[in-house]
Image 1 (cartoon, one colour):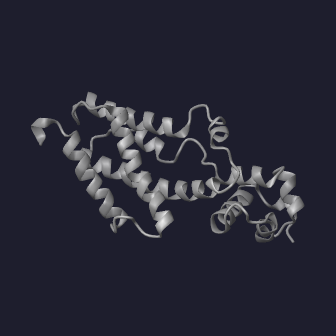
Image 2: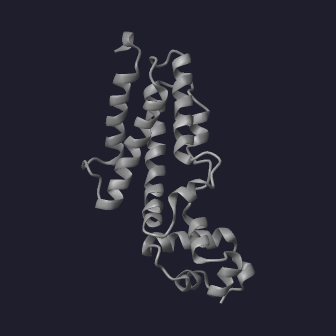
Image 3: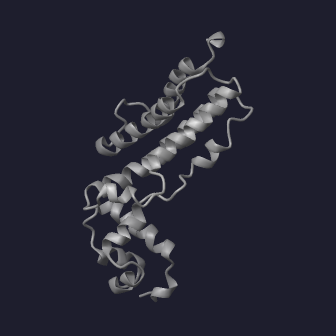
Amino acid sequence: MARPRSISDEQILHTARECFLEHGPSVSTDVIAEQLGVSSPALFKRFRSKNELMMAALVPQQPAPWIPLVEAGPDDRPVREQLTEILHELAEFFVDISRRMSVLRFSSVDFRALLSHFEEPPPVTDIRVIGGWLQRAIEQSLIRCVDVKATAMLMLTSMHGPAMLTDMLGEHPTGHSRDQYVDFMVDMLMQGLLPRTQQ
């Protein structure tokens, strides 16, 4: 059995995350410890309880990995190309988030208490960041003037909803591949965002 000090917190959290995602919140810490080659007491020297371990393993870290990409734009590429890239990043992100949230929903986690750990709730951050990209695109005359918060919400939910339903159903609810669905959503967005003279 590996000595506890030879296992990093990152290794523990990665293994715990995989165990929680595969078996749900009821998985025993013995199973996690066995996967790591340590004892359960060794885990509790790092994380005081199973709930603390689960929270550390499953609660998404801030900032989300797609945020730097969005904060850096818009750039000189066509708007369609940039929107496609953003929606692909969101689609991939929400596949992971939906799986994590599914496990947390079936645990005893209080979501309001969970959100209180963040200076700004992640959904609010997401709307602000995408809204910022849209506002800069408006100022650069790349898109027409729109309600940036509502449009940001549309972009986020159009990627989050299918990820959540795919996790529940085992397949995309519309039967599209992820690429097909993103292309469709970009087409819809372009119709609504392009300046009137370009439509």
